Amino acid sequence: MTHVDDRKGPTRAKRPTGRANARALNHGGDSRVAARAGRAVPTKDVAGSQLESEADRAERLAAGKRSAGRGAGHSGRKKSKRSTAAVGAAIIAIAAVVATSAFILTNGGSAPQSGSNPPLPGPATSAPPKTKSDAAPAAVSTVKADRKPPAAKPTAPKPTVAKTTTTRASATPNTGPATPVFRRGQWIAVLDSYPTDAGMDAEQIAKELAGKLIAAGIPGRAMFLNGQYPGIANSSLEPETGQWVVYLSALSNAQAALNLCQAPKTQAIHSNIACPTYEPAAKPG
Image 1 (cartoon, rainbow, N blue to C red):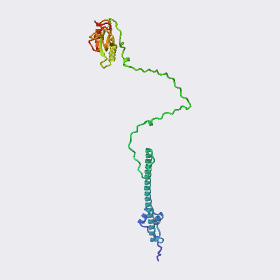
Image 2 (tube, one colour; image 1 turned 60 degrees about the vertical axis):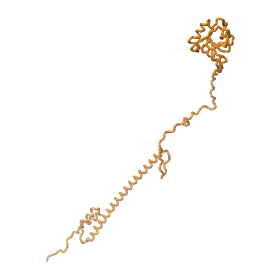
Image 3 (cartoon, rainbow, N blue to C red; image 1 turned 90 degrees about the vertical axis):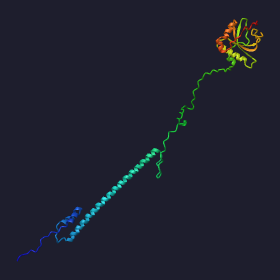
Image 4 (spheres, rainbow, N blue to C red; image 1 turned 90 degrees about the horizontal axis):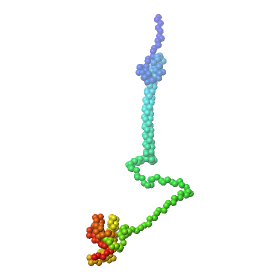
């Protein structure tokens, strides 16, 4: 009789499907689950249902890790967005502070209130002209109040000039006496005569003309005829009266008197070429 060994040899456990192993390994599954899934388990110890539960467990762990990774990435992106927004807000705040400081420094006033627009700068105008009030104040005297001012130096009195009243007579040169005295042999030439009854200032006119002759170096004189000179007579041989005459005196003869009266120098001052000559002290005839 042949001995039959009815003991069954060891049988290898079925390995989990490739899909379960791949999920466990690729998604960072539990190494123990992977090891358990890969090792040989006797058929009599581990049933197929246990293997399936182990694979499901490994898949759930891998799915949990994937969701955790996605959550971490999403939160990181949110954090980066929040940090970027914070940086932008800080930059805007700094710019606002700088602009406010610049406005205060430029306009010299307080910062504008919220909700109101800052005043616009007015058009540039030229500087107003300086007035006397803008001038520098006078220097304050530092002299003590109790100090006496220096005594003024005595000044010499100004010479007083006596006012003199000038008249026509004083301005006119000396034209001789109104009734001079003649001797025999003295001749005169009459340049012109001015009657007193002609409505004019005969004396003044005669003296002014005599003064012009004297100023030119000619011996001119003015005298009043009132019948006192027998040699100065009219056509009736009567002495002349009531007139002022301008004459050239006194010369030694009639021709010399005539020449002087008709000289161009004399005629340039007063033109009268007749120039009658007389010997006042002698009667005619």
